[in-house]
Image 1: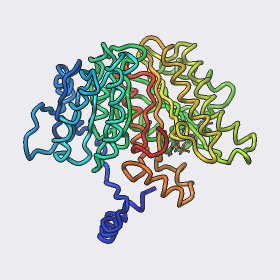
Image 2 (image 1 turned 90 degrees about the vertical axis):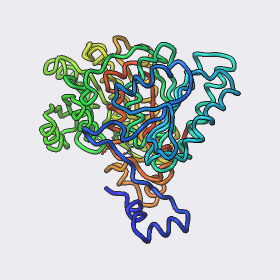
Image 3 (image 1 turned 45 degrees about the horizontal axis):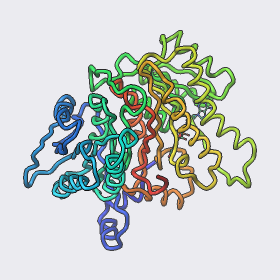
Image 4 (image 1 turned 90 degrees about the horizontal axis):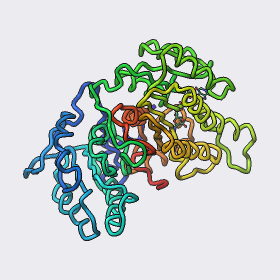
Length: 444
Ligand SMILES: NC(=O)c1ccc[n+]([C@@H]2O[C@H](COP(=O)([O-])OP(=O)(O)OC[C@H]3O[C@@H](n4cnc5c(N)ncnc54)[C@H](O)[C@@H]3O)[C@@H](O)[C@H]2O)c1
């Protein structure tokens, strides 16, 4: 399933038309290659705040080369600015002072990150200024071009030591299709991080449950979690049993063939994980379906089946695993929402309700979880899979271009985001919903 338009823009005729007609020009995004360094180049660090002192040490730990003094004529792969010291609107000019001289010195697919303080944790003019960072980073994401991304990371007071896994993700090609996002670290739950022993295989010895694992995004989630060291237990419906078994065999994983909407599915999953694996560390609720119709034509079965698979099943399975204590300490619960659950979409009242409900599940559990267990969700935009291949051509074409990167994302982009949440170092990353959408123009 390739992007034909992107292929065309790489031809001599395509290049000519793009240039002369001002057509969208999707750049080939750099993606992470197993074993490669996290950042292929140098990151410039600036700003003065709570994180400034520790930043270079954290980047060093991750094997990322960093400098505080940019040199003329050099190209940089990333910029990180500590804005936690900004306490008034007037001081926001420090952003301009740092970024403006560097904007023409960026390499391909550069990564821009601003670190701030969650506005709700401060007051007065500091709160105003910290909230302003959001408009800055979101606009930067739309301006940076060349496959670049821009993010805002709000780091709660006391969570300064918990940012490594997030910087590893946001500064590397693993976040290829994530831009214009606001992440909160330590805002709910713990502010502490668990030390990561091996950054190449952070999930070594961990068990990861992935629903809908036989194809599409679920297959890539299984592959990426396996790459990071996890033993994957894939779940899918009986109709997909042979694909599921083949994939799990390839990944030295385990499989469970069942319909997650079955009455006894939560109990069967809990029993299997307890008996065969002694528990579970990462739970990814990926299985999902669409049954699109405008509400005026919506039959009961279309409504019910979408809510049952996308929302009720993740809710029931999570509850059962928590109640039975099957999720290990420092465990991860990860939902797969959708941009439709944020922005709404014609013909998708059922789907959007289910996906907004997944965000509700994150909100409702985030404050409740104990023992370092976190809950977060991804909200994919247009991802090139069998699900989107079924979308009519014109809608598909428009859907793919309506984002800052003028292209659809790949299943691996969603999987890498999930692997960041799953990382044992992400204990303070709780209650987040991050869009994997190339900064789509739809929604917030
Ligand atoms: N593709 C996109 O652009 C996109 C965008 C936003 C969100 N999403 C979400 O990402 C997830 C994966 O999407 P995809 O594009 O890979 O879809 P897909 O249809 O390719 O794969 C979904 C998988 O879930 C399985 N599944 C469905 N119902 C099930 C059930 N009752 N029990 C067990 N397994 C079941 C299917 O058999 C299939 O293997 C879904 O939750 C979807 O809503 C996808």
